[in-house]
Structures are given as structure tokens and as C-alpha cells.
Amino acid sequence: MAENAVQELDRAALALLQALAAHGDALKPYLEANHLEALSNEVVALRRALLGLEMGALYWDAPTDVVEDLAKSMTMPVSEAAAKATARITPKPRGD
Image (cartoon, rainbow, N blue to C red; front, top):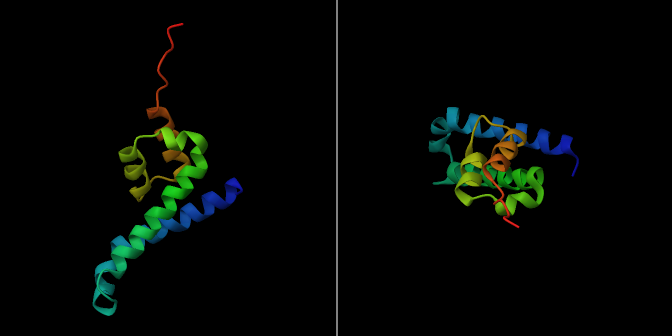
């Protein structure tokens, strides 16, 4: 997947998360129970997948709580989140 596509999808996901946070309460009376929460969870799952695409194999080495926090961020693009998560993965020095 092209880097451009990841960035575009992430921008749309961030905008949707922000819109849900800002206007979700106004929509609740018109939607089924938990619909907005489920939608928000799906958008976070999309951002988690995009974060994995940005990080590559390092994604699997990142602590789960770090990945979750970064995927749920409503302001940080995945490119920035990937850099932050990668920085938190410190390879252990080998004493050969």
C-alpha cells in the first residue's frame, strides 16, 4: 500500500474520530444502542492496522499498551505514532 494511501486513510480516520467525539452525543437518540461506540472501535482498529503498515515488522515488537494508546490518539497521525512507538522499542545491547 502506498504511503500516500496510508496517510489519506489516517487523516480521514482522525477526522471521523474527532467528529464522533464532538457530535456523537447529538446522534445517540437516533441510532441503535452502542452504534457510535462500535464505529469508534472500528476506526481505532483501522488506525491500528495503518500503524502496523507504517511500522512494518517492528509493530510486533512494540508493547501492546503503547500501540493501543497511539491508535486511539485523536490528534497524532500514524506516521508520527509509528516513529514514537519505534523509539520506545529499544534493542538490548549484545555483550559479545
